[in-house]
Amino acid sequence: MSQTNREWVITEYSGISGLQLREYTPKDAGPGEVRLKVEAFALNWGDMDLMQGRYSFNFSELPARIGCEAVGIVDQIGEGVTDIEMGARYCTLPYFYDMKGVSGDTVLIDARYLTKAPDGMSAVEAGSIWMQFMTAYYPIAELAKAAPGVNILVTAATSTAGSSALQIGKISGANMIGTSRFEYNCDYLMQAGASHVYFGEGEGLPEALREFTGGVGLHAVFDSIGAGMISKYSKALAKDAQIFTYGTLDEKLPELPMMDLYQANATFKPYSLFNYIEDADWKEKGLGFVYSALESGRIRPSIDRVFQMEEYAEAWKYLRAPRKSHGKVMIEVGD
View 1 (tube, helix red, strand yellow):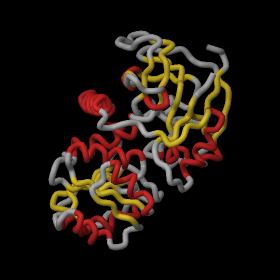
View 2 (cartoon, one colour; view 1 turned 90 degrees about the vertical axis):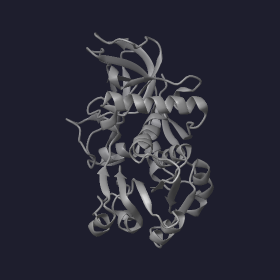
View 3 (cartoon, rainbow, N blue to C red; view 1 turned 120 degrees about the horizontal axis):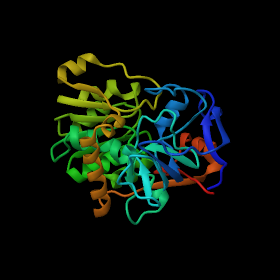
C-alpha cells in the first residue's frame, strides 16, 4: 500500500459545496479495530443530511469523512480482534461513525461493525445491500410483524430502503402499499413487491388507502418523507397502528396530527437502524435474515450507477436529481 492515499471530507456543513478531495497517510489499526483497503462505498440520503448539518448527530470536528457503508479487503487487524480473516472481503454495517467515515482509500473500523461479504457478489454489489435491507428489516419484519392481513404503507417507495421494505413485506405476505409522485414508477414498484401503488402528493390518499385495505386501514407506515405526508395518511390508520419515521426527504420534521393519532391509538416512532446494529441480538437477527434471503434469491442487490473516486461530488448531484432509474449509487475506489 502506498503511504499517500485519497479521502473525501466535508470542510463545512454546506452539502456538496463543502466536499474536498485530499491526500492522507493511513493510520494503523488500534485495539479492537480492523483496517480495510476500501474497494467501494455507497451514497445514502442520511449522509447528505449529515453533510448539511441536519442529521441526528454532527461530527466531533471538521474536516470529516462521509458515509458508513463500504466494502473492502482486510489489510490490518488490531490487538484483541478475533474471527476476522486477513485478506478477506468484509462489508461495514451502518453505525454512528463520527470521525471514521468510509469515503477514503482505507478505513479504520471497530470489528463489531464488520460482516463477511456474501459469496458470489462483486465488491460493488456486496457493498450496496446492508443499509437498505437492514434499515427496512426491523420495522417491517420485526416491529410491524409483516404477515398476511397486515397493511403496510411505504412512502417514497422508489428509494432503496423503500423498495427493500416492499420486498421484505412481500416475502412475509403482507399487503404492501407504495407511494410515488410519478406514474412511470408503477412497474418498478409492483415488481419490487407492492400490492398497490398511490401516485401523487397526497390528494385523495386516505380514500385510496381505505380502498387498498378493504376499509381496515394501515397497521404500519414506513415513512421517509417527513412533514409532507403524515397528516394525509394519518386519516387512514387502523387501530394501534405504528408509524416508523426514518428520514425527512422534504427537509421538514413532521408535525404530528394528534387527533388522528388519538383516534387510532397510534404509535409514532422515530427510527434509526444504528440503534439495532448496536444491540448484538438484534444485529444477528438482521444479518441472519439478509444472508438467508440473498442465498435463496428472495432479495438481490440493485445498482443504479457506479462512479469513480474522483467523481464523488458528481455522484451526489446525480443522486439528488430526478431520475427514472433506481437502485444504489456507488463509488468504486481504484488504486
